[in-house]
Image (cartoon, rainbow, N blue to C red):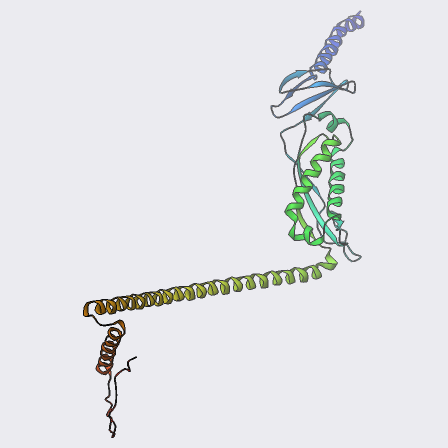
Length: 322
């Protein structure tokens, strides 16, 4: 009687415990989605769409359903290659193997590429379920695109001169290929932030860089000297032109004044001839003698020494007439 009564008493307790366990198990189907995430529920291995947005949701508990959470706003960073020292037989191998690329002029460069991307909401299914490791596909895409661009460029263009243009080309190419292959991510930025030669030829690269810097400095100095000389030459030219213009003005003014005086003198001779009744030749001779005497007077007035004429013949200081 006692054993049968205990069995009957323990049976409801077991049922309550099983019921509570079932309820607790069913409650594990509740899940919350933060505001910056979306959730894709896989029910019996098949993804259900549309994705669940922020809030409290319920679905079948594990293992019948699985929840995949994705932050669409997070910017993720992927680094391809590290330009570290090469390993040799005396040193342990580096933790990250550098990525070496061959340029178009057959030089080797070790590049490190930083990629910033975010998961695309449009191609979310491809990012979650199209490949086991989508970041590995993106890494291979970056390496392939960089190899294509570097192989068509010279070492100087990749190493120093055209790195910014190469980054722009790389970004456009990666975006186009990532969208065409439906990787499920939007590439925000691709940057080659380090380009170095292998350690064995760093000294030679340094010599070339120093020579290029010396050449650029010499070219800049030559251009500065040429610009200085050009400015001095232009100043001299302007000074010569100014002096020539000034002298031309003086000469022109003197010539116009002499021409005006000659014209007035000719008019005066004609007026004297008309008023005095003499002919033009006589009036001209009288005027010329007067001008001659005035000129001699002015010269003798300004002269600092005197001339003494001592001889048997008298000196004739008059201008011969015509």
